[in-house]
Length: 106
Image 1 (cartoon, rainbow, N blue to C red):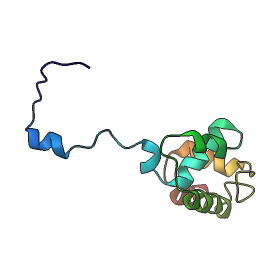
Image 2 (cartoon, rainbow, N blue to C red):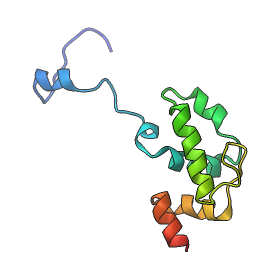
Image 3 (cartoon, one colour):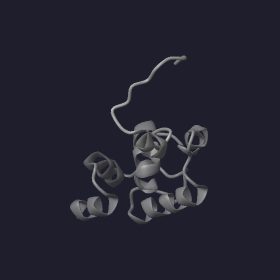
Image 4 (tube, one colour):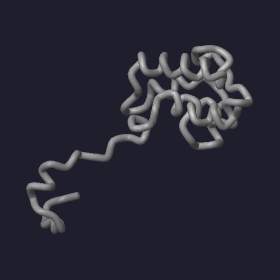
């Protein structure tokens, strides 16, 4: 952009209240669901990738997410070292909440 005119179809007060940009999708979905989707898509550890994103999830949320995935039997181990189980692959493919996926699977 450069110097010049801008025409907006809303009041200046609204513009002043708007966020600079939309929040990342990664910050709006549950951390456990994000971890499962990444594990299924990448088939490798996801922590190195999460460390490189602009707005990474908090480490405590990541740890809790891995523990949740393990308790639901979607991962073989409650850490990034765990691999996705067949149930975890189905849950990721369903595209619904993980708890609801567990209900559908049984």
